[in-house]
Length: 385
Image (cartoon, rainbow, N blue to C red; front, side, top):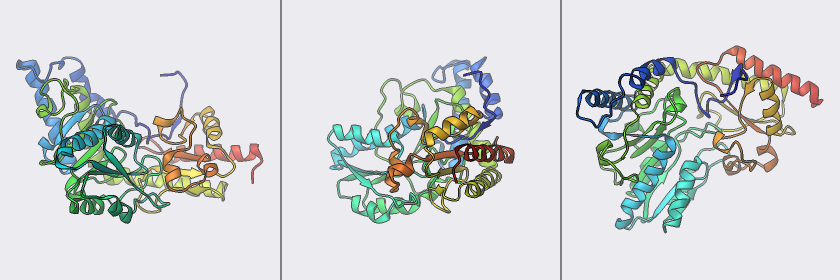
């Protein structure tokens, strides 16, 4: 961590600050409650109880059963497990195809490409210019050999929320399993696995004010899936490795608090995002906003300002103490155009001018004004119209 102060952090889609309540819940398990949950003595039993209570809390938050929640190291592991675990399990049933949308996180896309190396076939699902996956494209991608479909619940770059319940129904008519990467959605919008009708759902704690390095995979009872990590018999024998007790406890607390205050939290960040959009439009009338006009995450603003390369804008804002992004943080060192922006049909020029500004619980209207003032200064100094 550098000593530089960042007065305005507006990159919550990349990661969120740890909630104080989550930290408080974690501390006892980082100090005196250090037992291994698999141990039979009192230290182990206490840790095991904490893990199971957290499992029940998380299950309640998303409408699942406790035995359907499996702890992982985060969203990437959960995505990899969902894709590889299902496809390797159903291959013997003649299911050697999977379908993924073109705007998935790289955790899904790269896992799918690894499966190609194992002989599986990957079909792609196209999206509209607003980021909505096309139902007809999904139908076209389904074959008798399709074992799994994976479509994000909400996109991490443009914020578009998908019609997952509809897509799950279409998928199930082909007797395939359905997975959704809900990493960007859980803790920010209402998520109920029964309402969505999904078989698998991935989540990561650091996206909803929990600690980094811990997440979970919801796995509906009856889903055909195998373990992809061998070792001990933790997580009902499905995911080997000593459980991260402090992380799990902190994750459950963060999710519980966010779900309890969901309506107020959504309203807060939506108002900030709307204020920012209105302000940017007044400064740069030519600005182009990405994502669905209605079905989008409340706190994400994806905007291109033609003639203003995003990388240069990001560095200027950073020097003014404002943290934003030019896309997913996982790609922050790669100068290639985002695959998401390409998939929604943006030209390379417009995509290269796209900034992602994402708000969280700790942001305020003052932060929005600070960002807008920075844009006004940039416009005056570069002489743009």
